[in-house]
Length: 322
Length: 261
Image (cartoon, rainbow over all chains, first blue to last red; front, side, top):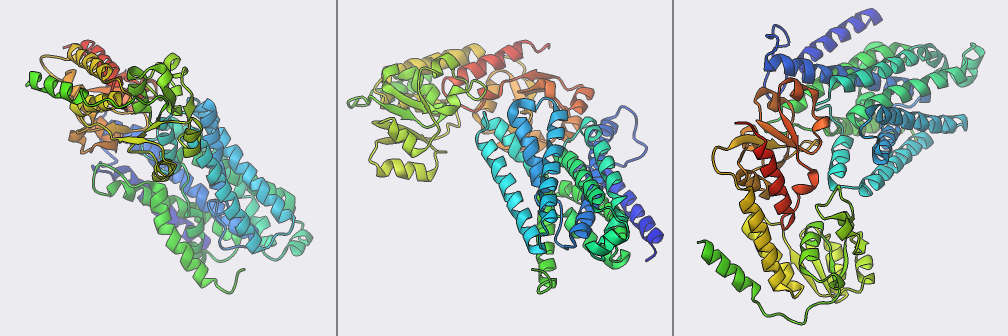
């Protein structure tokens, strides 16, 4: 498929998913023509719109980050959650909450971004040391487990059982009842993260020919790595601080789109951003449609979809990696 | 009916008192609150660490600090050389088993679902401490507080929702206290069960009446825009039965008196 046609089709899909996300819920609300001041208009403006905007931004960021990481590491299993970047961001945010910053969400967000950037820097050190594919995924798994354990440690030290419940609920990943202020805090950094990833795309193409070739083509590998580190760290960190850990988006989307977009990293990052947005918008609308007063946690729903997909991927790549 | 209940309580209180234990350790913050009210201070060898935190417990922090706290592991508890350990339904099975293996006397307490069950628990703890009469006094004090918090007349719709979303529903003790203080709990109207997480959207569509919450300043802006009134109800008041009930009932009555007809 031609890149422009693919992008246009995906953008249309995102628009449809956005409208679906706005109208879906325990009660369906049409996104247009609501009487000003009615309960429905209030719900649309203050609950569903921030939620849809966050799903759009976070989905796009996770999709793009997955595509960029897969290109950079030349590894089909790379994804912000698999490599422990999301868990490190969550650890940063929980640490901030634990130290008493719960009332200042800006600090919680900043700590989330710091956690993600530190995780990216650790991975960068490994790449600098010439780590193999297997080493990389292993390092990611260890990082993820360590961050998860440290988070559990902080939770077990939480001063009150109620604060504890709040952190546990948040860490499961959801966009329920987020405010416009949450969206305003996360979206600028997500936009910045996406903007940093885009210029790294061309360098990634050259890198796919091997590091020596890339260097001879004049690619500044250090600059490219810095862009990916900051872009992924800031964008994913800002998202996790608001939504908790939502995994698998960055893993699934590039694989679904590669047959349409081709293998070049530069050709897959933008479509993955669009595809990630459409996937998360749709998933976040579906979790609200489960029967009963409760909704399914978005992070859990994505794991239910993503884990079987991951296993399928491993099965199809068996013999080729490791 | 009332006389009969009192008789029953007296009977429960007048059980045979064995040699009273001299080093009691409580494993649960709710039992802690009863224990410090019915046992001699020198009888208490340890309470749970939650009770040392004023944000988590309804216990007066000055009182709590008089007793050593433990973090709920069997070895910490054994180091306090207890002759009686008061367990709760939530004490981990492994800890219970370890304590019992080491031959320490234990007694387990449940989670009261009504005022009568709470009274029975107070009396049981008092009896275990060898001070049945103090249990009876505590029950009477709680009854007096409940009587003082009683609202006669029209009930006003209300909902308790913690800032985490946690909402107690029908069947919980706190909702019974709400009814007692003149509130009609709305959780069932939203399809919520005993302890459910309430989303914000249904509260915008249909007002819960008065919203009781631990942190009114963190109320979702859409609820403020929708004109939902929120008042503070501390999170440490709704988790325990026993003497904490008296404070919860008093706070509910105070809130109810502030409601304009």
